[in-house]
Length: 277
Length: 362
Image (cartoon, each protein chain N blue to C red):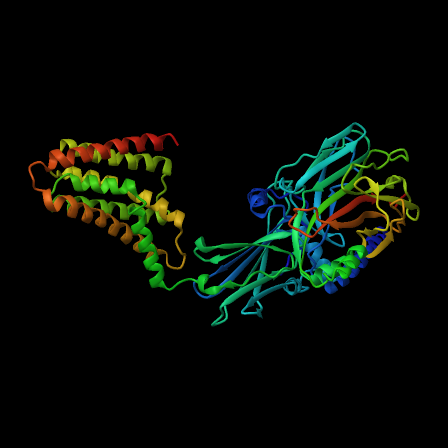
């Protein structure tokens, strides 16, 4: 048995054990994370990358096939500009891109809003889990904590894919999603244990006081949590390599005329952290 | 036993089989996040239930691993783990179904492996309602509930972990044989009256040849025997002719009979043989209609015979009405042929020629 095999096996077992605890105690919730799971984070330049959309919890996800009714925007930006992510309706992976230009590729997906109705208990629990304290306090003041709630939610998912060699000059950028996480340093030049700053924006302005959570695929139970400062910034020191999901939820009163009381935005950013740097 | 190695081997491919389903459902479900899971529940005539779950094998495997807290291995009883996050309930009481699974080979390199899990069991005696909960998916999925003879299926969109509405079993469990027989008889009858104008015109063409009862009886008997033969052969899959051939020929047969009425005033033996031949064609047309309705697997022959009997009753109904309205009063009149047979047959012939051209253009 090679040392590499046993190390990976050990990590895998650890991840399974922690995920099992989460799955067995968590009641089924109607609000889940959504992220982009590329077939590879580090494609060879010129190759095709499948962009799988996943919905789930703790990076355990179900495939979301490409649904034209759901897509508001599905694009990627590389050194040569912004292009649409193509794909066949109903297919998983939902999108495909060609890593034609070497460098960092920023993928963005924005969904049309979906509406969901939740019981008071589930909605209250969900506000608590996602750190939406302001909304919870407002509902308490309005004596709405016992009321069934309709919420329209939109997805604002991003992913960073690196084609070719990494350099500190490459960077994530603001795509203009309603709620957006931007990595302020290139994660592909960050070594494990180095600090990685992220900025959360809502309608292109920094969003202070929002809970941002970082989840690693190898150990999803060990979540890193931080609130954004006045500049909408959080800093995480990521303790291990592999796929990372950075996520945040923001909720505002639904616009007049919407068939819902609240509108939420679910931002996510995925990337691979190289554990050999 | 779950063959994990098989599932592992078949992961990493895209959902071509589900593509059409998702596109089709997109308009129905609005902007919900629809995953690739589908669940269908069928209640059998023998008071059994059969549930089929089709889902992405890789995603299910990962969740099963996480829930069980260990990597999968043969003989580890993960079927029981799977059952822990779903509920099959009758009148609010959980039942424990038998479980088996299979993994569909991917259709191409870009398709995912799909796992099909089948649950089955007996419906408890006296049960009135069925409910379903499935927590192995985080996305929206369609639950289809119906009887064995698929026409009464109901679809409900559910989120993972959400309990379905209660489905009343009275409308889902198969009806008695007598009810079913009456239903297929009615379907056969209504396939002629009022839905089968082409068959009605053919029968009227037969009727118009001569006002004599003997003429009508010979032709109707030949037609009945012939269409029963091809209906039976087609339904037992011993005969298959494309509707694109059968349907224009049916229209042409109507035109032929009507045109012949213009030149023939009494029954000839070759006319009976021709009507027999046309009956063979019409039988294939009836089979097409019956296939669209669907036949119950458990009472196939009974449904076939009662449908055919309904068709006969419809034809006799057409002849009966025609006889009472026309034949009874003026079938033997001197002007019967000139004022009734010729204009009516000409009208039928024109209509049938139009249908022939129309059906050929599709």
